[in-house]
Length: 406
Image 1 (cartoon, one colour):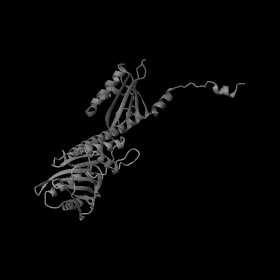
Image 2 (spheres, rainbow, N blue to C red):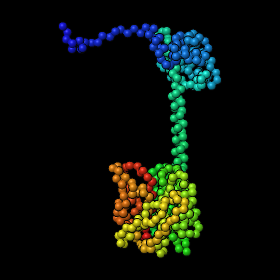
Image 3 (cartoon, rainbow, N blue to C red):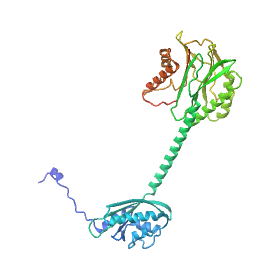
Image 4 (cartoon, rainbow, N blue to C red):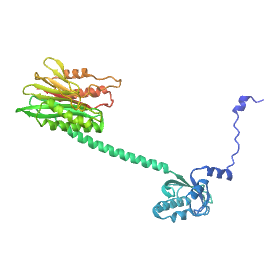
């Protein structure tokens, strides 16, 4: 008696599979593609249900099943916009019939009563033996073609938007100082690095000549948010500030007037601008500044090895149209002293562990590089920021200005 394990190990019994004419027709009719079988002359001898349904829906001439219709002659007789594709299909099928190619593939548009459709045609010989039979299948790929068209349209729009952003970036970069100013008694360097194509950070150097003395205004600003809207507000602030500085008035009055104008423009947008305005008189070693919601500038007294925040009261620009601003003054800006103005993207940059760089590291870099030029101090800080990020992309714009008394 055979054990159960021996029975399980026995070869499975496979019943003979008879691919009869009835079964072949059932399989053919189950396919969604429109299928016709042609003889060696291109005459249709068999069609499936999908073909017959298509012929009925499109009111094709001849019998519903298309039996007896010469498909190649039908293609050759096509006129109008579809004639070129129809002739290409006929030529391809003929090459299969003659055995010049084993398979012909082609996709083409076709207009029907319900609109434009796209089809993918495939023609293959059933066998090399006589009589010659060619299977021609038409698969409706309209949905795929429409999806491809929509994708190309989105790609085109994306490319156009990218081009527009590149142009906006070029324009915005031209609004930033092209070179560092040359002012007697001062060594100055500045740079902005945007995390997007356009940014909301802003810095400017504006030479002044008041009372016959050469002065320098240094401005650093940070617009809330990123992108095009922030870039537009940045450009607006720059233009308003430069225009207002051409008129008489203290720096607190200047900032107040710029705020009044900006608040009227952006009051419904929820956006605002933090700004630090510094006026330097190197002949008398006097600093004057207004802080409008911005981080205090860092002041380093090299001789005394002391750090000090250039603080002061003042609301961000664009919040309250009637806000007033405090003017602050410092009179002992001596040789070797360093002022660093920055946006919060510098000390709030984070590493892969989520740790923040912080101002303490910035102060340490300033102290260690105090004998070097403003440009070298700037590069030392930015290099540290990049290293601290550990390859991560910046989440905020970075702006840094270094002023050194020489």
